[in-house]
Length: 225
Image (cartoon, rainbow, N blue to C red; front, top):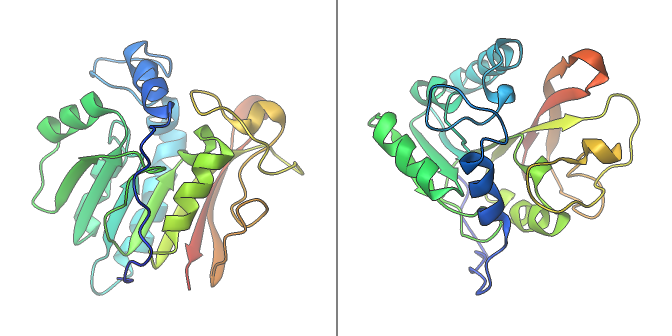
């Protein structure tokens, strides 16, 4: 795995994102089911979840020496739980304290760790591959920028974003929370300004078109320098 350099220090004044995300789960703004926490239909609908798990499993299984994966924004862990066995270590991170406490009590594996961290503020654990599945789309440009600066510590980054179909203006700013840029006919592109992420290689792994012109969910693999 890549050696960490220039680690970001935690800022003294916390971002309001933690409170916003906690309220989403407390008020079931992404829906609810029998479980204590629910990260939305995007983490449970089989038409979205099944091809994603198959695609990421194929990528992870291609390595003779399994990778250390950092799941940045693991949510209710319905998806991550299917990927753990294909890694040498799976480090699952989320900003919601009660959610991480629940996940620790619910999901057990010798190769699995859970940490409550704000990925836009805290230093990230070391790993080979960072996975961000429909996480950055909920963050302001300022917070995305802070995350992006740490992504260069990984060899691989697998990014999944909900984007408009066809042409759109990338990276319109939003307030962090429940919504995403889709309402502004925008979506994240880490390679475009203001983020300008430099990568060695970019490869689209998966594209899922949603019904009723609700956009497309794109999963992209970045190999970092």
